[in-house]
Length: 586
Figure (cartoon, one colour):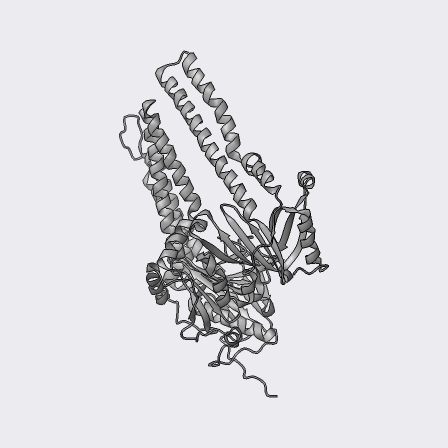
């Protein structure tokens, strides 16, 4: 039998290459910008040094030699930074050896990192604003993950070289694992295996993802430019399916992502409205509270713009055996994950998403430890999670998985069969409304302080301003009591909804844990991906004959556990027996 034709490579084996020369001046520009920021923040101190007497007359108290010395120090720091950059640039090398990828770095302490091709799991890259202008990015090579295996980061790689490196790594990985990579111009065997109707030039659109939004064109124009030294695009395997965010999904994704800020703004607005009532006590209180509310609204609006820029140009695609996601208008982020590395499928609903019948679809993955940034991994925003779609109709989740990830399509189509025990409602009300409810303790404290401050204002010999302050404190305390009672009522509603929705399902080679409430989360994990499964119970749970089921996967940096409280002991032992292989559910 004849051997398959050898696929050409971009890099010679054993050759050590330099990163892009923008490493020198971009880092120097960042240092200069930092020095300017320090100088600007020190400007008030410099101005105060120029004011010599109490009458406000200006007299230059800094001599000419001191100004010259400051300029010399500034220039010396820049020159020193440039020299260090040159030394670091000359000692930063990467290359492809016979069986591994190598990275050499370090000036005083030299480092050599070697990553076997067979251990490469994903190759991601991020680009800041300056890097996008220059057409370079920071490349992140992830291995099997966890705290023992470390990710490799190669900074200041041109976009074309980053794409070539990614293609080269997966090509050499296929050879290392004994798989024959497809020859150029041939069809994608993975596309044929999953039955995708798309072609390399026109991939199939994923149902439910919507048409492109208003920011996609601007993001596409910026991405098409590829910066000053980005180079031409380098193709990989054909894309078999892809999707994006519609205008509605983009808007709702921004609102859902800023849900905590929305709650903070509502709270500040309510405080401002309550301050209007305090105007009769003293006008200053109203002005301060209204000003704080307006400032909170302004900050929230800036956050919305930031979230919109982050979701701009959101693309998801299936390429070969990988899922790829990229997004960002100013800072572009590219993440990918091998199908075999996926640990779980997560369907999360925040309060906003649940109101509209939408969800966030994400994949649990093994993250690696960055050599320089500790446990941030490849995605500092959400380590251990790759968001495939931030705002998707709940009914379309299985459809999207069917196109992007058919290997996991059957994982989310079964309902939860074993609900939490009936006694879980009483326990949830006690836990959410009293034991773990900070609002309850604030209400008790404020209810004690309110009459004390009111009595002190009525009985103690105080001036008008002190009486007004105590009256305002009394009003604020009662206001806190009302807010705490409202929060407690919301916690009670959440406990009721949690009891009705939460449960577990196991069988058909996977386990699904649903934690409901006003915010719900469904985690579905194939049985081979579960690292361990255990039952936990405290004395109160044992008295109520319930237990907690804890399933641990290898997602995240280390391990990630999913917990379901107050399952009946009978169902808990059934889950444990199924995991141990002693019983087989229907």
